[in-house]
Amino acid sequence: MRTLFKPVAGTVKVAIGAMEILNTPVVNWTVSTTTGQVAFAANKSRSITGITKAAAAASAVGSHLPSWSAGSVYFSGVLGMTQINGLRGQITAIGGTTITVAINSTAFSTWTSGGTAQTAATSREALTAQL
Image 1 (spheres, helix red, strand yellow):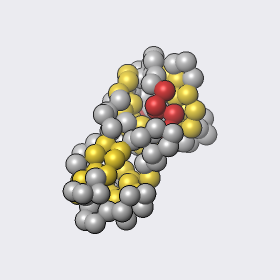
Image 2: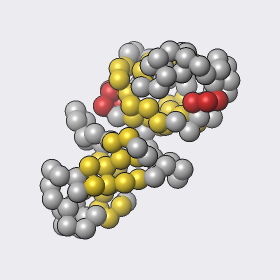
Image 3: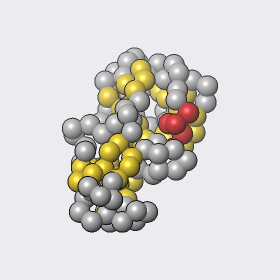
Image 4: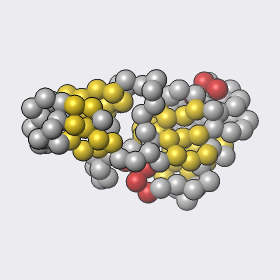
């Protein structure tokens, strides 16, 4: 939870790091205009079964959640393509068992195994809100 003072409905923007977290077409966060508290949707996390080297990296996650299509994911625990660990990418497309994120991984090492993609902010990421 984060608290904003005197929020006005429809005017609040929320970001994790430098990435604005949008609320369309799914609701990723809410703000109470009474208390000023910002609450994020429940974390969605999936194990990674592969990541491509591409201008927009495709990550195989075994299974996906349709609500990821409007969100972003944070990568951790990846072996081989360790450059992606600690990065957050906006999801640009979803497939049956893949998500494509706006991270250019062409110069990264080759993915070898493991990793997790999650939607929730981590303790390493700054949370900001703007009225």
